[in-house]
Image (cartoon, rainbow, N blue to C red; front, side, top):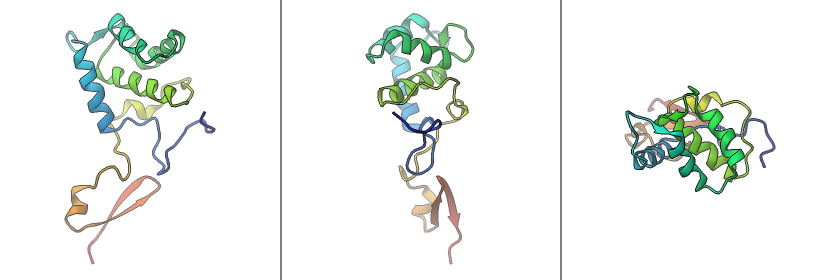
Length: 138
């Protein structure tokens, strides 16, 4: 279990943030469900999410958070949010009572997961509190 109300990873980035890699994986999984007009039905999502092994009551909590429009269907973003919440629950985190704002934002790169192109071309980088700072060349 996480001891903090808003868990963070070792580099200061929120564990609730969806990485580009996670989002790409979720998008591929979403497409395997054959969305219609960009949405999957609640029944399609339920069958897929039950494969996680989580109890239906927990999946219902996750659904209520991820179905941001409360329309009974999911688009790619909502599906990705649900998948991230499922992953975190399986890792021992509590399902939040409200959806963390960072989950609604564009995917966030893990610090250190990739080297920005500017670093490969001689710019120095400083990581501080999960923020990337580019330093001028001397």
